[in-house]
Length: 130
Image 1 (cartoon, helix red, strand yellow):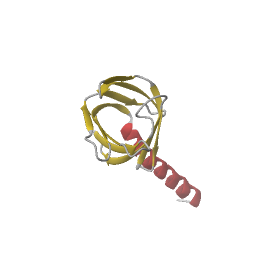
Image 2 (image 1 turned 135 degrees about the vertical axis):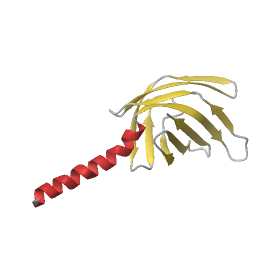
Image 3 (image 1 turned 90 degrees about the horizontal axis):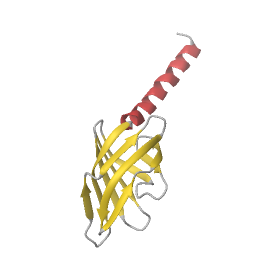
Image 4 (image 1 turned 60 degrees about the vertical axis):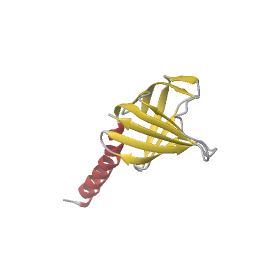
């Protein structure tokens, strides 16, 4: 194998490894659990609030419907997403509680657990299941 072929092979293998983890996210996930906690207060945990659909082109669709503290929320807006180093997922969407960078706590083929904050010491945890 000559030097150019070796370099090309290395680049292709590296690109495949980097994108394979983000491809794991592609598909429709059920939001099995969504939890919000604040220091010194009792948290709120919701189950089966809808779905998140991640497309391979970095876009997605939310179909969420839930009630927190008597306030009904429906979130059916499109979003953009990106995967960083297998450690973070960023979701960009207007007027959405899910629009933020999430820390990946568990990354399995059929189960994801992410954690984030809102900048005011409130912590959100989301569990997704395929």
